[in-house]
Every structure is written in C-alpha cells, then in structure tokens.
Length: 458
Image (cartoon, rainbow, N blue to C red; front, side, top):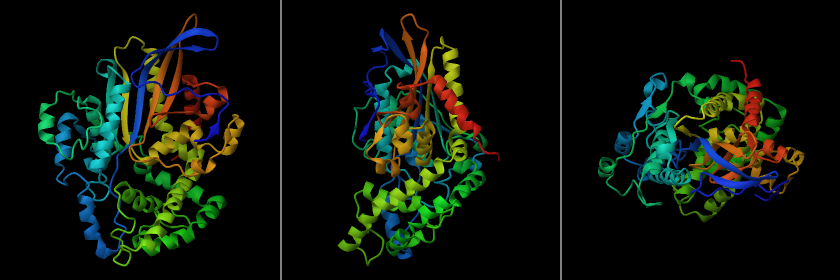
C-alpha cells in the first residue's frame, strides 16, 4: 500500500524470535516479551454459499463442488475431533451446525484447499511462538459452523504437527486415520459457546438488533444514493447469474441482491481455476465474450460488497454491537495477564470466525488500511491509493493477531503495548500514528471504552 507515513513503522519481527533488544527514545536498550496472544482467523477456502446457476444446472455444479470438499459423511471432521474435540453448547442452534446441518450440501463447505490453508497458518504460528507448548495456555473458540470448526482443527493440527512445512495436500491424499492414531499431540477442545455469550458474529447471535442497526444506515440518503448506483450492475449480473434476483438481501437497499452471494460466484470460481461462466447455462459455456463480461464485473461486484460494509462499520453503534463485547473480553484478559505476572502460562486464544468479523475488528482498532483520507491527513499520512481502501475484503484464512507486549526498560517502569498483525504484516492504527508509537494497553482500554459507549440499547 503506497502511503507516506509520519514515521517508519517497525518491520515484522522474525518468526523465530520472541525476545529482542532495540533502542528506544534515548534509552540504550529495552527488552520486549510477548505475554499474550489473541488470534482471529477467517475460515479457509469454501464452496459457494448457495447455488446461483439455473435450476437445470444445479446438479452438475453440485457434483463438481463435491469433488473439492471432504466426504459429506464427515469422516475427516470426526477423525480430527479425536485430536481436537468440539464442544457445541446446546443453546447454540440446538447443538447443530448452522451450515452443514442446514441441508444445503455441498454449498458453504470447507474445501481441501481451505483445510490446507489453515494447516499452513498453524505451522507458521508454531514457528513464530516457539516453545508454546510450555509457555502458553491455549484455548480455541469458533462460531457454530462446520467450516469454522474444521478450520480451527486444521490450524491447531498445523501448530502441533511435526510434518515438514507446506506439506502438499496434507489431508486429501494421506491416510488420516493412521495419522491421527500416530499423533501424540495434546488434546485441545474447540468451544462453540452459548449463543448469548458468543461474541464472534453478532449477525448470527443478535439478528434482530443488527437488522435494526443496518436498516438505519440503509435508509439514509447517502447510502441510498450510493447503493442506487449499483442497480445497473445488478441488472447485468442477473443476465448471467439468474438466481441472484431470488436471493434478496436480508438487509435491503435499492440494489436488492445479496452481495456476499454475488461475490461468491467470482471468488470461489477464481480460487479453483474454473471459468466464471462454468455451469451457468449451456448458452454461456465456451462463450468467450460472456467470460470477458463477467471478468469485467468481478472487480465491481467485490468493490460494492466492501463499500456497503464500509458504510455499516463506520457507524459507531453498529461497530459497537459487532466488536464491543469481543474487545471487552480481550481487554479484560489483557488486564488479568499483567496483574498476574507470575502465572506460569500466558493466554493464547484462537478464534475461528468470518470475513465480516475480521473486517469489523480492523475497523474497530482503527486500522490505517481502512481509514478515510481525512483521518489519514489528520495524522500526517498522504493517501495515494484510497481506492484500495474502499474495496478491501478479507480473503479466505485471513488472520489477525493481537500481541500483548511487555516492555522492560532500564530505570523505567514496565510498559505494555499491543501490536496488530494481519497476514504476517504489521498493521498501524490511527491511534498509533497520532502518537508516533505502537498502541499502548492504556490506549486500547480507552478505545474499548469509547466503542462500548456507543453500544445500542436492545
């Protein structure tokens, strides 16, 4: 991202280092130690959430996607559950998955590719946080989807695996039963919490509240004007993807369609290297002009999806509903960590969630990559690529890490900083840029308090 910062941001630390020395503000040296880690990852690559093709093409498309996912009998899930058992609270959809138990197989399922993505992320985490078996108290949480739970299982499997890095087709081509039996990894339970205590996706747990908050935004003149501009795009998309008109947006707006499903068509096909016209209709198969037209609409579709959420997540009350309880929980854990310095194991929490969660977290922390030009200008940053900000959308397996850093400096009281890392790259925040330093724990506490002040009444 081509921006000119007011200072040079620190480079990403080596994966193999947890402690390091550096000069700072006139002091000769300081020692930094990571004393808490909170990892939020989107599930891995998945099949489309819904069939969008003509009715007479659904059977053929469905058969194709079945070749990209583990067996529907859940063999792989059951085997992975022997290493990483899953506890679903009975008050969360009756203990059943929101996706896999909905009867829409194979749509919305984690693919072999998605499993591999999370496995490799787990291996990178193992390298970054060396000796975690002795240092960390590891907990895992997930939303109530088979694809998020299995993503968490694969990430944990990668963390503890002794298999060489980037093993090709870790799950698809190996005897998983023998692999599980030969493993001596510790058993880590993946918890799917009671819906009333779940903080990872408010769209699922408080749908009435979220619809009311979104409705307030969608009814605003600015949003209506913006969304109306996409009506022509919707008409063109519907010429090729007929089911879009049937799957209306649950939140409304002049454009009408469900933009997440529309983006699925492009993202899922691109991920698996198949033409955008594949399975749509016999009229479009091998039609190079139709393929070029759809390719041209891909960028606009994903951009409009991102822009809708940009309007939503710039609302203080909506972002408070989405991340306020989650940030409060993390902030409380951070406070407890620094108040119990002699604890033998530090918190290492893994949360398996969704694109809308990762995006909300980034808006919540004030990530510079999503800031408005005026926000950047106020902290001395010249924005050259605002268009990229406007269309950012978290990809499959996107991973955001919050590190709590203890800083020991000679003749100074210990300080506590928070570093944000997205897909292996340090993320700067507006708060940090304003002060010319990493966000302090006290800054994070203030940010959480400010967010929660806007929390809407039910």
